[in-house]
Image 1 (cartoon, rainbow, N blue to C red):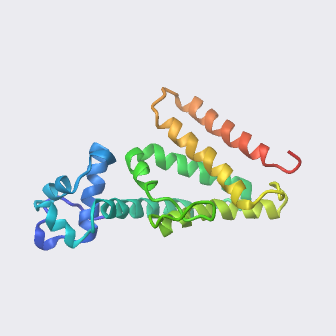
Image 2: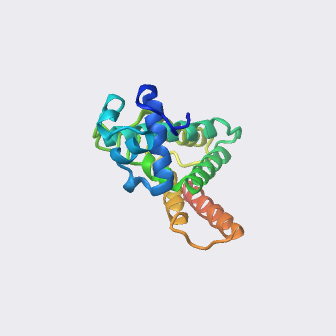
Image 3: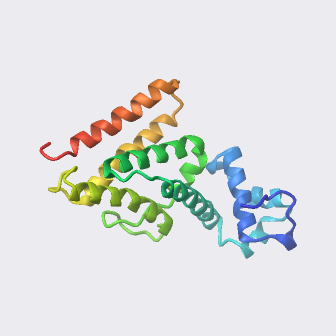
Length: 202
């Protein structure tokens, strides 16, 4: 995204406004972001931003869209053909992204994927759904190969793996003083345990 510094009113675009909000989130946290602060960083008043965003939630939605797009680029780079290994790699990339971008990660999940098991509220992002579907695709391929149980709804299996991955990412973001070796062991143990519990015959 382009730099938001020194952007005047006449040069503003939605992309620049969203980039300024993203910078504020990284610096201060998502709870501290306001239209007034974003406007001030761009040299305009908060009302001037309404030409580019509907409200603060729309502004955060723009940031979330950008972050999901970045996450999807990383998912696209995964080359494992084995579905179980692909599922592991997706989980690791997801956790890595959360650890690298903690406040942006929080912003992303203000806008959940659209799924059959949720009540649709109108906040869902197509990109969030696409990200979830990467895991769903790996799960379906693993079920078809006989690597995962076929007596459960594939959506439930996908939710199970995502719950473990998302939960682990959030635990690691709490700031426990794990060294790299312990963190890697924890990630491997959680993923191994979840996958083992979803194997046929368990």
